[in-house]
Length: 392
Ligand SMILES: [Cu+2]
Figure 1 (cartoon, rainbow, N blue to C red):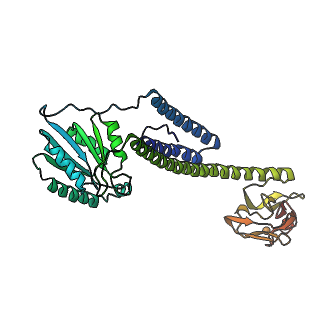
Figure 2: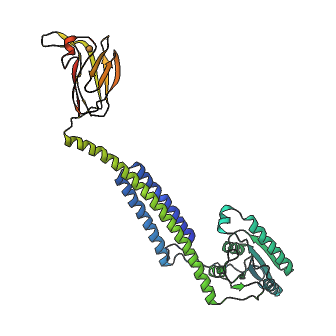
Figure 3: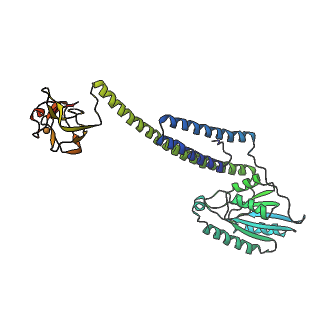
């Protein structure tokens, strides 16, 4: 797998960018119509694609290749400064012997740098005290055994090994670096690949010393160094692959939820629309969401020319099984009613303005009348104190 990123940090930044980019998509999905979601997705994907291709171009043009650090020699011209990077190998006789040998050369100064062996998870949780004190103990023992305080100094650090070497360049400016590791990358311990990384980064001679317990120090050949580089490269690729997978999973989940939100809102709209369409096809009469009416005494002239008590609305269109709200202002001093035994309706309309629920279970045309003795003629004539409930 060849990633367009030239470092893990860059890949991680891209993952963060992806997550941030999901925010407008999620917002659009939650609040906006479907076309807005599509537009936002297109813009975000386009921006990410441009960003990725720029990274790739930079890599192709070789712009990302860092210049090696080559600090000028510090101190007297005759002085030689050697940085020895070691930790779990500090107790080896062969390492102590090597440091003694280096220190015995005239005009040489040695700095023993012991980066604490902090796992990625420990670095995350901040559990660095134990590895640091372990490194300190190993270093002070080694310094005691070397017994050359004038020439050999020691330093413990909790920064990552490569960064620690870079820091040492600022303070110690070595002319030469020795990286001491085991043969194989272990669970704890400096990685053998570190020597190759230091060699790549800094323009000073770098020696890789491999110190296995009880055996003499050895320098791995080019083949072995290449193998270390491959192994660490594939480890980095695996880490990147895992991150990419996790990111893809997050993206997929967010996208699916966005799509679900859009789909469900579309479904609701479609359901409302299809219901209206079905009613139209079935030829059902329209139903008002609420009906306002009044009751007046001596309101409406009968055929004989006399005024009779009446409801201002006497025909009610309702949907079977759905409650219809009636707000009735009874201006009379006595109650009236909307009563239909067939429809199962009996609404007592009290004086004053009140809201009532009219519910008919089965479709049909039902006669209703007022059961309170008022205007006897009006009680028997639809359009006055009587009328129809049309349930569809
Ligand atoms: Cu009445």
